[in-house]
Length: 352
Image (cartoon, rainbow, N blue to C red):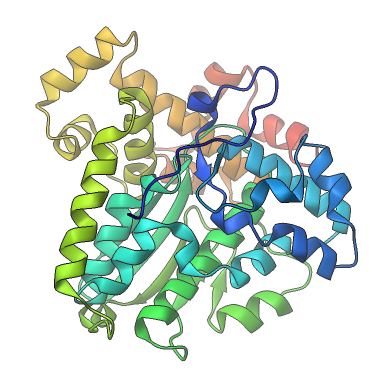
């Protein structure tokens, strides 16, 4: 049986996995070798997080998402490589995602594959969400972190969008290229590694990281489609979902992050996604000691800090990405959250 990870890499003192998310270590299994290939010994970078390369021998082990970000940041510092996330991402096989990857390659077409990938992604990663937005001409497959203050977020976005490209090339053929790649990070000094791998126009300083491609690709038939096996895997994935600990607030924050990226972060939409009436959603949040507005603002604050640190987006664009009517409304909200204006916060924290 293909299953969700049952064991977590030993925690650091004071670490709370439920607050720090969990992610399977499969995509990180090549990190130590990448550091070696860049001419450095990974031992020191791993030890700074009280880890060892041998801890990553089983792809089904889990590590906190926040700690994984710290490990990547440690490896960036060790190697001095400004595109380490991209290099790691282009080496990652989709199979490292576990059961969502098996569903990909047994689906009837690309649309069904990506819908399942989005639906079951939390069996692999519970620190970020995948989004799929489709209109008449283009589709956008995105990735968005919803945990606050994750280190190496720019490298994680590079990694994740590279994996998305590998997924699409696996489904559509090695010659497949995106129409555009969007990265929620500032432009690097050396564009060559990005241009070489993505083979498509790249928009840095985006408000949401995504691969954009013509929607006609969604009807492309998957050559390894297997309806019987796909149905069997879906039942397994549903069973694994049912076994996951109930975390309404965490689930809502994930849904809010994805919905915010698609400009649909309202209570009615989130309630429908959960199969609830809006009043029921509000009642359950009240029982959990919070409210829809509080959770929406928590996600807005997280996204605002991420965009202020990792992009050069003007405040007007950040305000629009957070569904504020204008820049002044966003600035007032941000100062209420942080005690600082967005511009002052960016200046204070961007180069830390």
